Image (cartoon, rainbow, N blue to C red; front, side, top):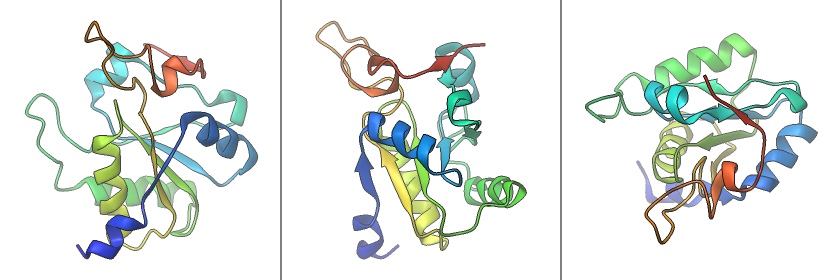
Length: 147
């Protein structure tokens, strides 16, 4: 992947992502965490934006290897939704690292407007080594659901 492709994936704060998802009917939130994280930690609830997040694992659980079919699976899900390669795609993971790599992967396949959700769903660790309190989707009080 060319270095220039890395520079085009920007970090967008969670509240700005929420606003963009609600104002742009074609925008898409892609949650790249594992099935275990979706089940046990929760997922963004986009009902107020009349949407559902796209759930495609970037790394497989429990071995945490990148899924070699990630881009193929996500491309198929986006095509099923009728999403073109120039819609706004927002990638979210636990804290923003995997989602950045996932966004870069999709940028390399021709998707032109890939963004990383800064601080992800749970944000960074706090002083007690817990997530979800000082940054990310949950800490911002944005809607989410579990189970």
